Image 1 (cartoon, rainbow, N blue to C red):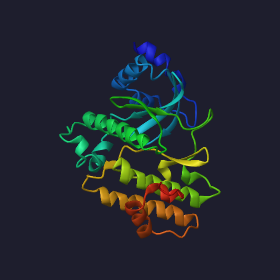
Image 2: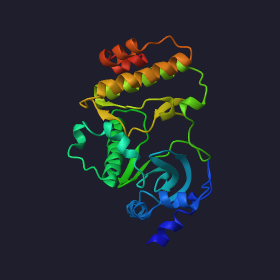
Image 3: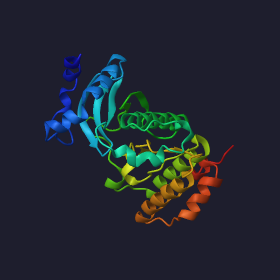
Length: 261
């Protein structure tokens, strides 16, 4: 079984945007339980191969892979560190995850399920996020956002021709999240927004909380502050107060210039 898994992981070593400089790092990411999770997803037909790394962070590494219908993104959450204890504020108080166990591996599994459920809820409302394809334990499979050579760039990495249009699209995203999906993103920054096919696409939604969360309003204002800061850096005359009013009181489609019928 493990030989079969490793055969389909060969591309993950030493190719892509960055190389694995230490085999021990590879072994920490693909520990035994992670390999078992990947095997489950392979047997379901969700993962065929894992090709090369496209992103890495404190909580997870992301790989480009292949599935039944083409390219996929495989997000593997770390199980060997204590990072998730610092993220408890995004889980405690969310009514969807009451009775949470505090063992580290349980926290990781809950976080992964949370991101999967948030993606589903946002997708149902027509928001531009990666399509969720499957989840098991600490492995989340999503639509791959990019081309054959590399993932789409982050908003912070590029200059765009019409920042006002992008700002309105992102304001609409926050409004739909709040009014229809009943969620707050919680970390809405140019680091978590990709520029794909000439339009923004939002990623990393694991920390998104229900609007019933006790810190939901605090997180919403912080999200707006970050969007407004980006808008001002692009030369736009925008304010947190005005954006907050629009999100709470305006029909979301009006923010894109469409009047509600």
